[in-house]
Length: 484
Image (cartoon, rainbow, N blue to C red):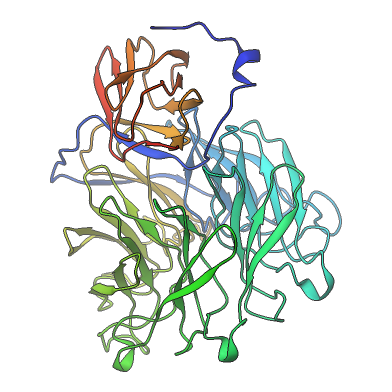
């Protein structure tokens, strides 16, 4: 049954989670692939986009640049699928950059439909900031790091934020300082005014066997725990995989360089993703079995929630090297990622892992852009979109990789209780006639051509969400979780 829902009513709806679930109408992939450079950054609209792109409920893509903009200190930008870059905000609007400076990671689309991120430096204490920005470009600095004596709350956050469905709080990491003087922290932040709570300060164990210097953000597993990586330290020094509860109970699951010559990898700079099989997937910048790079060219790995690690691929430079970004699982079930160097032109690559088999999809050239530092994002039109940090303009590019995958929808949140409202967004949703949660019909309203608002119905169970539109039925790829 359709409902007419006012903006006033919508603004009072409860939400449960900020992450976005991938949903797909058809998962059949075409062997054809097309790479297209959509836009070159020119400095005025930003430069050096390090993080991944985030899709908003308006089906536009949002991201950050580390440099460029009005004050050359980085930007938040909107990219429309028609190919335009709109710099929404330029950092360092006043002396001392109290609003933040130099964001090195992508944005989080939160349940409020606003975007949230962190900057590596700037803020009131010049050690990084946590900010909120609307899709119209209104920015608020929510927290400035190093607010405590000796920076016990951490400094230099460079990993993306996540939001939990169970407590509606933000979780993230800092790469420096903490209560133990070095190593960084894991933190929890209550929106909008805090407090910020440090759940773990690294180097808590003798010899820093718990790891340190996390570079990538966290992921919340289906078990409710948070999983992540550290770029350094640990029992063998080159990083770890860890698990932490929302209450701060910390466990080291794996220490890299546990095999001779670090054949299992070293220094995971990116965070993990949880695949549809329940395992976690990631990359390491160094290590592996290749002798073509001093210290190894890096790896792709799988690790179980219990800590059993399998190396899926060791890079050999000709197929890429030093993957600083994590992975994305697309609607065909395959994993995609990037390397910052290597390949035929020594400028980085885009690769695929399908059923454990590695394939290099493209060796980037100068005209493509160089050194992609973030994982690609699959947008609701089915294509992969990403950025490079350099290339022939030295400022970076936005690219599209078309794999022949069908358009699909996303939801935010990806989990909630019954009788709560969620957003479903994608393209051409006008005229939708039904929404179901694992087969249970739901009340809904088409709020915009890209956005549906739906009530999780009583009796719904965990499973796919389906939306029937004039062009067909879209079915969720990852199951929507109905929380107790």
